[in-house]
Length: 420
Image 1 (cartoon, helix red, strand yellow):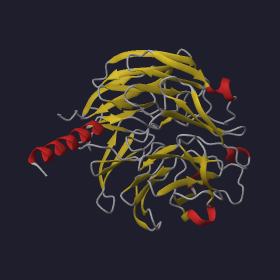
Image 2: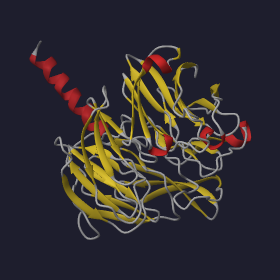
Image 3: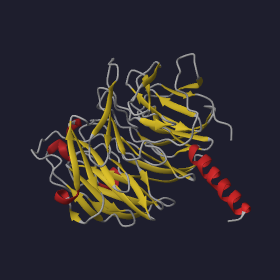
């Protein structure tokens, strides 16, 4: 191999890595697994330490911001209107757009904008409790807009809509799983045209038929698969057609009527990890197969190591779970063997934000604004405890050396951007 070719390949890898480190395009990060790209993220901060900027938000909100290069997108509400805001990386407001009328909130931890935006670098996609679903360009122009509740029926969720839109290579996909006709739908990114709609009506009782979790998209060898958790099942769908490929049931063997799901699945190309039963069980499912693979593809189910609200991390053969009361647990993804655990200090409130692994550290955010930073050293040693004012349910965002933390009232930027 020639020196020039080697130099070209190295430069290409560096450029790709740098590009990924600049982006946080969706709720669970660039790989949908709770793992950040890049290095140099702060591990210590406070009200007067390591805060790059702080922005007062118009109204309370629970959605996680997304980042693409110089743009930060987040959703909220103002004067009963759904709101999309775009900031630059210094926290300056670039534009705002209203997308329909906001619906009232039912839960103290919820908001009319629980779903997080998603972006592909050209468009940003937003979804609200009102059913309003829209695509905007990076200048704030509404490219298309529709209301999924008007098109396909009102949601019957007992509490506040939570599922976020997810992206495939060609489509933006939304799941609506509730007590009534449920579905997964894929829309053309540029036009909003419905490409496919897959019914997902499963025999789950009452509230167990409802889910607030988000689908996850995994690509392997150019083939994309969408995994969906809810209504006592995990289902896998072909991303180009929405067709169900396989399903696993028996997540609620006693038909508990209240087993709604909040935490989302996390997946690799080989395994799907499903938190369920209000945080009582964690199930590992081998991907592949067809039809009902409940008896053949469930690799393990464990009790007492799961979460109701926070979504786990999957990385390098391990699963990391933060329970709602702050017990952080590391498991072998193939066997379910518990490798270690660390009980975080208890305080007011529990954990709703999902954990993130960034540059060799785990970041776990408690609802009272406290972030615990643990080392990824084989035991989860506590490195730092950082406190900010405010109530937090949104997951933290990591991009290019900076951390974004959203409270109900403010957006904080922690740390300085890394030099290119």
